[in-house]
Length: 337
Image 1 (tube, rainbow, N blue to C red):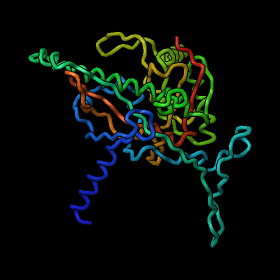
Image 2: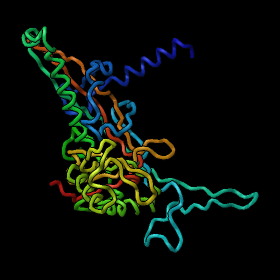
Image 3: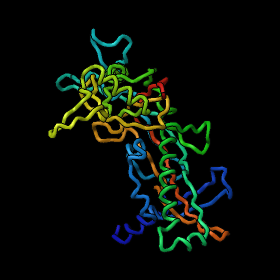
């Protein structure tokens, strides 16, 4: 293939990925396609990720077609724990024995995958400003740009909520979030403690060898975790800097995994509600254990309007993919106040 042909093929792929055909949705008209370049407005790139910490955790990949499809691993990748010290009833994994006889043949294992499909969901919000308002704001900050910035953040916050709490059986226009998608490992707590988190991690580690990376919880639970660590005497309440100035209180940014000694990043989200999540986002091999697949990345375009106004539509078409679901833990029943 020549360079020209390769370039044309890339352009063709980009156009196909930018096309959204709503033939399977209930929107009107029944069939419609939208073609829009990604990230038309630089405003989107300037929104700080601190406002949406959970959304910022996930790798984002490019989607194609009308639905995402992936193989979800439901089995272990290696032999489970065995011996007299194993957890009673613990899953013994693949039962794989690595040793084999000279001139013999190594053993083989098979993995269990479930094919999952999920339709891409449109997320969007409109900013409609009258032309007179736009004209009267000249010489000052552009009123439309200001509103687009606000609404972009609002859409990102809504996506953060959907990532955690989305339920397609309740709202057909949503994708399923972590609360619905994580089912293999779960527990119930009232307040988070370092010991309690360790207990929840232990079983998943024993059965699956999970290397957890993030703890997501509501503000009350993160405060409870800080109180627990301060109360145990493991962290001083008052710290004094080199100038003799005292700083009171602690903010727990990372937690030591008491099982394997790794560090778990603490993430506070007001959308976590009564649930907390101990997550694995990337495997040691570098593969994504979960990701967002974008048919259309967060962008802005201007739909046609018959009014004496201009509409700026902030939108995205995406879906959450739980690829290695057994590598995640969900805790329920947590206090929110």
